[in-house]
Amino acid sequence: MLKKTILWVSVAVIDAILAWAITLLMANGSYALGVIVVLLLIFIDYALINPKGYPFKYMVPAIIILMILTVYPIYFTVQLAFQNYETGYMWTRDQAVNIMLDTIVISPNPKFFNYSVYTLYQDYKPTDDFVMLLKDSDGNLYIANSPIKTGNAKYVSNFEMITNGSVSINGVSYSLVRSLKDPSQIIAISVDGQNYNYFYSPSDQTTFPNLKFFNVNYGPELSNTEFINSQFGTLFFTTTYGFNKLVTAKYEYILSTMPVVENGRNVEKTVLVNTMTNQPVVEHDYAFWNVDPNTGKQTMIIGYYGNVGFSNFGSLLTNKQITSPFLTVFIWTFEWAALSVFFTFAVGLILAVVLNNRQMRLRTIYRTLLIIPWAIPAFISIIIFRVGFFNVSFGIINRIFLGEWLHLAPINWFGDAFWAKVALFLVNTWLGFPYMMVISLGALQSIPDDLYEAASIDGSSKWHSFWTITFPLLMTPLAPLLIASFAFNFNNFNVIYLLTGGNPPIPNSITPAGQTDILLSYTYNLAFGGAAGRNYSLAAAISILIFVIIAVISAINFKLSGSFEEVNK
Image (cartoon, rainbow, N blue to C red):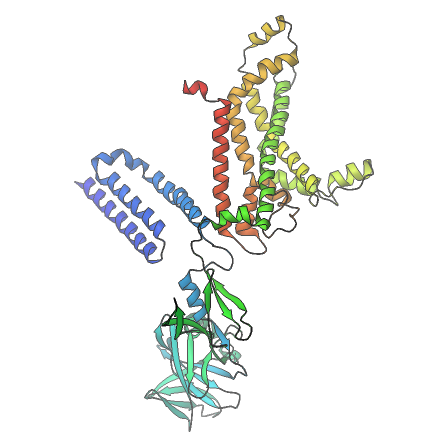
């Protein structure tokens, strides 16, 4: 009974937490992740409640990790590939509209107002209830009542000029309370007989200890407040002046109903209007545009993301400024992966054949020493090569080998595409040959000595025996590992990023592509490293392409190599 009670309580708690998460996700528009959590909720309840689901309860942690860290990222990547989510287009349409409606511009020939904050204290502590005293350039004083929320996180405050030390706003009486010692000092404002004490002014350093409270408690409210007066119009705290002073300003864009022509008919429609030009805002190509009333020229204001179908994939095929660097990177990626496997395997196999000689002395020590490059973290080795060996001015190769010994000009390792690729192959061979050596040694030791004895009796040379016995028998177990190595080097981001950074750049490319970039580093630069902006959608499209390429190449190689032929039989 106790176990059942604990089980049902646990299920109830889990369901409550997941239901709360689903509600939040759906409310925030994260529908895909919300659906995944719903599926997890169903699976967890089935595994814990249904007796037939008993074997599945041990899979719950793995399923949660699989769905959240694998399935959802894959879905999100595919979704991005069919959108235009990039720099300048990182908002939804509603968010873009709200941003425009919140944009404030300072009026021509603006008027500035200094201000002081007077706060209602309770138990000697400031509260969130406050009023403001404004002062214009002529020395006139005004009272601004406490901001009133109007919706959508917007606030309104009315301010009126003080006459004879008092003023009435919306039926509430405000009067100044001056210091008896110094009547020029206003120490409080009486609001219907209740005193609001002097609290903060940006021009009075003695009030700066209250600045933190002001920023935390009043700042968010005041930054979204319109101070309205029939004479001056509207005052705002703007990004230009911050909370230093108030200035006459207005919203740059407003919603207005006006006649427009749609399908040859005049209809009333709510549109965005630029208050500076009184021209309606134009919307096309997933963006809003200002229209110059004199020239008709359109200037982009803000973009938003949406579904664009296969346009990202199409750009890879039709836009020459994208296609050309992409093809360069694409071809180099295959060259890089294939030659990396060839060089590392060749060096590793040669060393394995040498070390496999049982008559060789100290071969255990040699094996241990040759594994060291594999044991050292790759990023350390790469940085040592970059700084110590390939530095143009101070590297060992340029300064000692070429300069002092051979008296040759230094090599521009990272400024010339050929030498940058040579450096990459040298470093990657150094990092990869120990692995190839170890797997080759293991495979060599599985080949029976009888085959070599029989070949020797038949008059076969060692070279002939290697190509007719050793190499064919090695390729059967090693082919899957070589294919895996090809796939690894196809996405070997670390060496490219840490050694050359993809440099030198490809000329006339509008995307951040370098001549030593592989598809993965190119994708990374598109998403995170581009100086001209970030293009997450194009990066997602290339990521899908990389996945397809790796899958196809692996399938073809496995099929042609016949690596699993014995297993299938």
